[in-house]
Length: 231
Length: 231
Image (cartoon, rainbow over the protein chains, first blue to last red):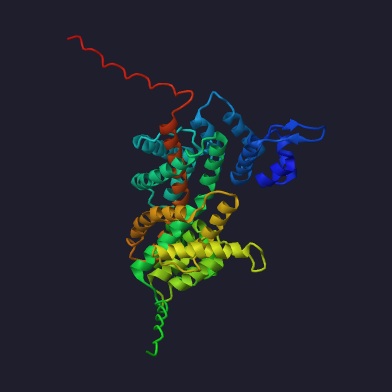
């Protein structure tokens, strides 16, 4: 296909495709004339993946390059090739500087969360950005005096695991690796606001059922009687 | 108690307490001398609530005032008094302007989500900010060409509801209304990053169990044999 068709089908402008080509995020097409190249389906897949990394995943060009380098490296298997993209997704939280008085508290909470995951049999690396995010969130909760007991965190973990497993099963439906990486980035990011808004809506529902409304909402209008036929 | 003790126990500076008093977010204490007032436990509760609304909830002074006005109005019951605080929590998404070509799509997705919740028996108002957030998130997902089928959203809703019900049960443990509102704001906001990071960690675990590591991680060091006693 021509560059204009690639741009159309990839949902990005021609200028953007050219930019990705210049940055090496998209391999060059096969030259047809001095000024035109031909692009295949593999270009389209790569274009869609790059768009997902940058636009949905919020990555920098360099982060996207790093993701693609691992994706293209035959030394790695599917776990690393998809996982590197997941690791590049923000937010990225850093531990406090070793000189910071907060650091001891960080180390303690980090070790506690790490221990909880290990106890549950979860295979995650210490370097997982989500482990740092979790540590920071639990620290904040506790420092404000709220209940962030390990048992609560465990309960949430137990509830989230089967959802994550169901979600991951969907990833497995993409035999082409690039599509799987694109899907992992897109579904991870785009379902986050959906999950959170459903949680808030569920709170509202639970409260409404438990406490009712004051003043009560207007009653449903009565169902109109069917017209009586003059038989 | 004196203002300095109130500040200490409330976890905010004396200047902040004075600011809340000036803004009317905290009722004045009982004058003891021309320059000193006495504050009670109800001041401390209100101070903690105001801190949660502004700091954790990210509300403006005016939003906090609106929350407190409903909380103090005997015409409302617990559902509204706690719910108004939940409604003030961001993000707040607005529908596109009626002249915007995107508006028809918004109306369609909004009606679909509204219908889904009604079908599931969820009692939520059309005005729920989380319903707008959900609408926007589903629109984004679909406009990028990803699967945001209603059945998927329903599945997430079904999974989130029991978690939300468990969480809400914790709210019920606060007999004092101000503490319940504070808890609703704090736990809604502070558990969001915890839920999301656990979801990402669970994805990593599912992938690791399914695909293993390449290259494999170093084997666990062998358990040292217990020293043989020279019996």
